[in-house]
Length: 142
Length: 260
Image (cartoon, rainbow over the protein chains, first blue to last red):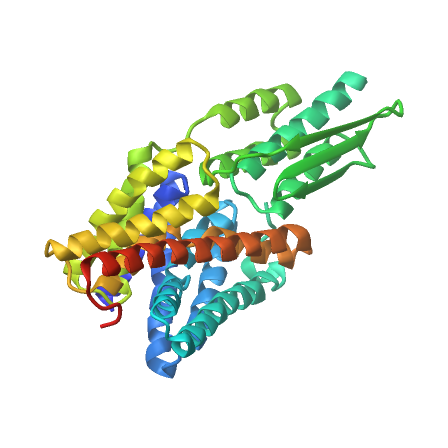
């Protein structure tokens, strides 16, 4: 779990470099990504369901990003986008493709649906937290 | 009077243009443009933005209407620029900065660069290393993904500089990711081809489009939202096509089975 935390922290920081995040926000972005990933891992242990876990992790990331964006007075996307990338279903895309080119259509379809569901669940998770009233996060936007 | 109207609209559209070109969500662009215009004292000011352009319109006290349109052709993600424009617009709205000072400041931001290329490639490689290890690979796979991601970004940067369409760029990215991963596996670096390729393609996945799409839809900008969802979907399919093509070719040339 500690290894995962450290890895997720640095993965998110790596994306900060790609997306030109201001240098003084690196550590905060890294924390959002790392905590989101830990929520995912814990939810996976507790429920055993990958899709439900992604849902909880997406909500955690959106919540942390909102709190940080008020505190640091920075656009919320700056924390949310690098943080959410470890959850994006790259694994699903890969296996869908793999089963498709090897002609196993049933498996490909199953993986494809799963991939779409993960993407959808990330959206819903972020959406729920983003549409909560502003007062819950301690301040006004901008 | 007209010159101040002109200047105010110019200032707001410049802010909007930089935001849009740096990968901000549509709502932020419209909101910033409108705030600046409202601060300048125009009651009937309006702004409108899609993912590819921004409009601003204001009516001066003498009844002259000034409208400007800016088309944004190329976008690159640059949060430094978004954050600095945000700072300028907040300062302007609170009355700390004059119109002229804000204009010069925005021009500076517009021409300011981003992190050097090698830093970005290093960041992407670091992310690939971590993600390969996080998503079920061993340390050897992670090292292999690091090297593959680094090598993959050389042709991608080359294509980016020549403004090649993003679909083609992602197909190439996926293909090179698979190719370098398989070469590395065959010279003995790494043990699971799946983990290496997954780690390597993670820097390409459309996390930004997906997140911005959600934000646009939430704010009621369904046109930009659906455009961005389509963008995310296309990128994902392009990556898969690239990886699939390279793997099929590799196995038909050198033999081997696809699924272990």
